Length: 120
Length: 107
Image (cartoon, rainbow over all chains, first blue to last red; front, top):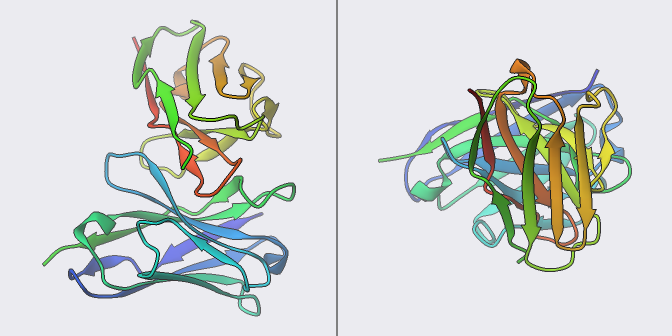
């Protein structure tokens, strides 16, 4: 059974940093691209970042480019999001999402999400 | 960026009704469209990919159609457990973008 469990959310100060983790199981992690998607409370979904299975290719939404870094550890079946220069607009539930076999751009499994609140 | 215009933003229908949601892309996305269901307090769930292909295990009352810029999501006979917010998402190009969502309620 595929499982994705996010952690690391909490309260961060404007200008501060947080590091999110996503621990996975139930599939061959290194074979799949992974994403972070966020959702401000009561709002819609926003794609954040993509990393390919080898960890060498990454993409970011313009809203986080230069501030967030996606990475992965294939030995530990884990995905990460290092968030710096936090802004109040970054307040959201952050979901890690696994891609399907047929494409790197469809999310076939999601974690339960971790809440990041940026506030002074 | 490809913009996704989803409508309506909310919808109230009775059990057994046929429900239709539309999604319009700002440019041709071929069939690179998915539909997700998100129940309150839960993560989204993939229902349909490639505009019309139902994920394994998804009830057949759900269906999708369309290509190019205009897409439709249909629930043939609404069930109480279908209460959720539904999102379309294009994957023709990065950044991946979602529709604004349709909140579905039971009358």
